[in-house]
Image (cartoon, rainbow, N blue to C red; front, top):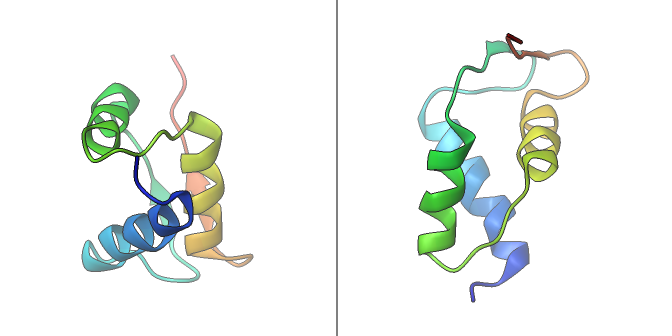
Length: 70
């Protein structure tokens, strides 16, 4: 298994490289299953709550995350 503390820096680096910055308003429409598989393949177990918390941390208190619901 990977080091759980390392997952935070890996995900943050992924989001920063895609252009996510503090203060951004982001519409997230993604397959969580695909995201879970990607990290599990590398030895990390993450939850939907982990992903949401990390996204909120990435955009900071002046940013927003928009998640469509069906």
